[in-house]
Each structure stands twice: as C-alpha cells, then as structure tokens.
Length: 89
Length: 495
Image (cartoon, rainbow over all chains, first blue to last red; front, side, top):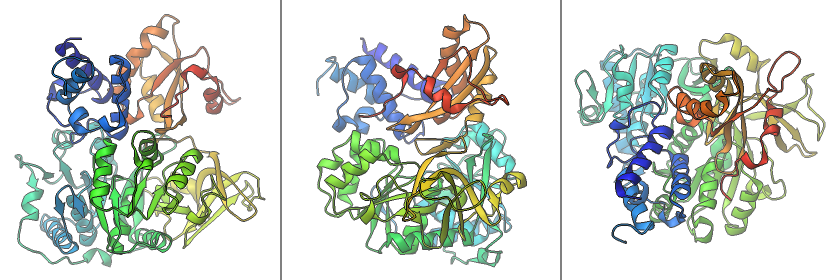
C-alpha cells in the first residue's frame, strides 16, 4: 500500500471511530492524539487492533510507544517500517 | 506531585491553590458557585480543585474529552458561573458560554483569563473561607455520573463526605509520606479524585502519567520514579497483564496495588499474586454516591476470598439486604446498601432520584450480591443497568435514545457484555423497520451515533435482530439479549 493510502486509511479510521462528528481537517498529521484528547488508553488499543487487522502484522508490546503510535505521522512511518516499505528502522 | 520533568512541592501547590482562590474571589465568585473544571491531571488541576474548595466554590470536574453537547447540558444543569478549561475543551464552550470569562490553561485568547497568568501572579496565602459553609449539607464537589435514565446525574458531595472517605481509605491503605503512586486515573472521576485526596492528605507523592495508553512508557516512569503504588480499573490491569512485560519485571519499590471501578478478573488476581507475592493487592468496591469507596478486601485474604469485594471500609456500614430490608442469609442474593459519612448529600435537582437511592439513611447501590458465612461480600450482578466500560459508567438508555433517533431503527436494546479489556463492552441490538435496512443501516448507524455520543458510549457493534425479548410490561429483557449474541460475535478482549 502506498504511503498516501496508509495515511488516508488511518485518518479515515480515526475520524470515524474517535472524532465524534468533527471534521478530520482539524487533526494535523503531527498532532499528539493522546494530548489532544482524541485517543484514550482503550482507544490506543482499539487502534492497535485496527492496524493489526488491516495491515496484517502484529504490534508487539514494546512497540506501544508514542514514537510509533502517537500521531498520524508516526503511525504511517511505523506501518511503513513494519510492512517493509520505506526505510527500515 | 511529579509530572514528566516537573516536581511540585506541597509548598508550591499550596501557593498555586492560594492564587487560584484569590483570583476567583476577586472575579466575584460567591460561596456555592459552581465552576466547571475541564483539565487533565496535573498540578494545575490540583491547584484549581483545592483553590476552589478553599474559596467556597463547588468544583464540577468533567472529562475534557466530553462532547460540546454534554458539557453544555451539565453547565446548564448545575448553573455553572465559571469555567476552567484547557485548550482541547475550550472550543466546546466558546460558542455558547455566557458565564464569566473562562479561565484557560493555554495561550490566552480574547475574552479569556489565562491560568498561567493567575499562577504567576503575586503570592496569596491560602485562606480556607470555604470551611465556614455547612460541611455536612453543602456540596463542595459535584461529580456527574450516568443515571438509570441515561441522563447524567450530579452527585453532590460535601466536605464531610470527602474527608470521611479519605480518612477511611487512609486507615486501610496505610499510606506513608514516602509513598509515590502512579496517578493514571483521571482526577475528574471519583476513584481518581480519591487518589488525589488520599495522597495529598498523607503527604505522599502523585506521579502523574497521562499517557498510560502507551503502557511501556508508563512502566518506564514507574521504574524511573521508584513508584510504590499503582491504582487502576480492570482495563488498566488488562493492559498491564496483556500488553506489557509488567509481570515479568522486577518492581522492588512497589508496595501496593488497588483496583476498583469493576470486577478484577480472578485470572488477573491469580497472575498478579503469583508474579508479585509481596505486593499488597487491594480489591475494592465503591460508587460515586459513596464519594468513592465502600469496601475493600484485606490483601492477606485476596486468595482465600478470591472474587470477594471484602467488607465495609472503616466508617462505612455495608449490608446485603433482601426486599424485606433484612440481612440476607449466606448464599442468598440481595442488594448492597451502605451507610456512613461518605454517602452523598443527593443528586442535584433530582429529589425523586435521590429518594430512590437514599432510603432510611441507607444508600441503595443497586448492586446485587451474596455474603458468605464470615460476612464477605461477593457481587453477583447489577440491578441497575449501568454498563461499566473502560472505567466509564454508562446508562444504556442514552445510547438507545440516540439509536432511536435514526429513521430506520424501530426498536433497540443496549447491553454490556463481559470484556477482558474494557470490563464490559457496549453492544446494541436493533430491530430495523425494513429488512433491506439491516445491512446498509448498521454501518451508517455507527457513524450516526458517533456524531451524537462520546466515543466511549458508541457500541462496539450493532447486531440486527428480528425481535427483542421483552417482559410482560414491554420492557426489554437485557439479560436475554446478552444470551442471543452469537458466540462468534462475543468480544474476547485481550488474551
């Protein structure tokens, strides 16, 4: 899946599941979603479940960190790394 | 209090609270005025909370992630005069707020007062004028919780309630000034509020962590700060056990763990005991109407009385009574009732609702339980239909009302089904007006609900059904609804 598709998929999921009728335009890709109140602790786990199901890999416990899941930007980069796209790291 | 790299001493916190109290008095706050507080955990929250208490105001703490509609409803219901908000929740108020200028924890905007500016103003000694109010009958804190009708109820708690429950908890928890607890529970929630009060009263340290979602980050904070205590709801324990290496790690400083807000699965109790035999595990039970805590199980008995919520905490009488009001025999199911100085004054503006639960000096909890022959209480279910999900207390009626606003829904029923992560997961059953609506409408309906309800109330799934099981008087039989959920669709949560 191309980077823009991953981004679109993630944004759509976050908008539909967590943004409660708000326009996702108000969500910047670099916004920290926990601090902005978009996700809470169970929301992060729901997001993890969605990523695992949609992108067919498992999110390891030690990967549950803001650097991987804190913002749309971080999620896209994380998925690219895990799915073998982009620069590994 | 510790949050990230900041360490705030009691002296600093007292000064901050003094400045907040002085600012509100100067702004014309009168004793008994209600003040909405929409802040995340941190020293600013504590300063506002204690500042308002001292100035005789009534704090109305709310989840900053609440919808604008819900905040507006509560502001109107409690006739809030002031509001303290963070940047996240400010837009929720901006369009309709007509009270005094909102105090904003964030960059100043036109028409707001900056909390930063208040806290950087000259020193004001903290004068406790609030104590001149009637400590028994005047509310000091209003905590909103879902009622049986689904409409949020304002639980009025007095200073006496707060002090009594704090003293009781301290008696069994035996906190020391050297204790440092990880504060992941929001202070706007009764369990989090009790965490704030007990640790401040004990002179202990709260290590605030607002990012428990990233469990491993929270665990690093726990380790770096040599935390001695952990308090969470069952879903926090599910995350600790299911999505981290908590049980495989060494915690030399950890002295106690507490759990309330729903039943802690027996399997989790056993795993914690096995991995951390020296840590005191307090399984507790409470209600917002009881300020926070009603019972606790002595950690020494957590295995021999596994599954029990213990007995009444010091200062709280707890009984399980039958419909005739008499104590049930061991093994017989009855309702838990409670009496003590921690029991709320009542629900704000709801004499009928108050009379339903406060009868003859006893709080009727609506929770069904049995007692064993030594008086230990075991919860068996809830008479009331609350769903406890992810630490939230959700009235199904509000969700059903929202569902019924959709033109294709003929009737519906909402239940909570056990879920290892959330405690309970919200599941809706809907009868559609036309067969053709079943598939199309199910997805549309979720989007429809997301626009009308906070995310935590939106059902995990909507199950189309032909008919709802009902009683003779036409009430939906929720228990039967749970049973018709196809096994494949039953949520399993973490394993």
